[in-house]
Length: 100
Image (cartoon, rainbow, N blue to C red; front, side, top):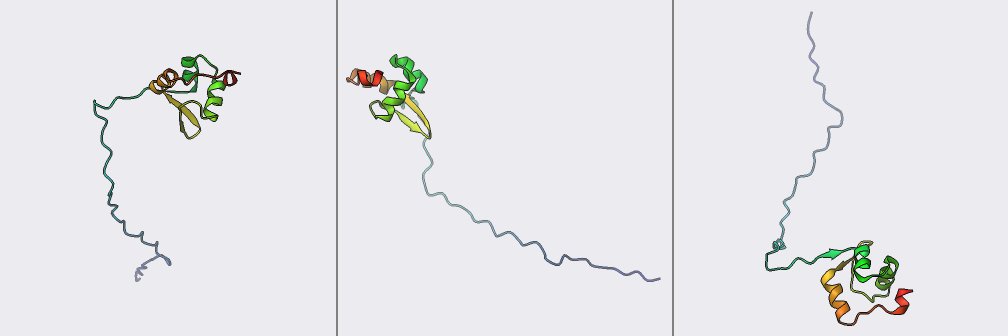
């Protein structure tokens, strides 16, 4: 009795992945926030409406008409509290049209 040895190899060997390339970052890394830079408090629409004493609908309308300083991040609106205070002090009053 003789033993037969079979060497099985797949018909289509798996493709070898492409060689990885090194990515070189040429931009400087962001600097950490130091204690000298003040951190600004940011609030949302509801908090801004409470701070100004108006409804959220009025806040949305003022933003749409670009009458109030705001920040839009994707679909959300934000406000810096110090900017809102300065805006009110400098005469950024709420008109009667905006309140209706």
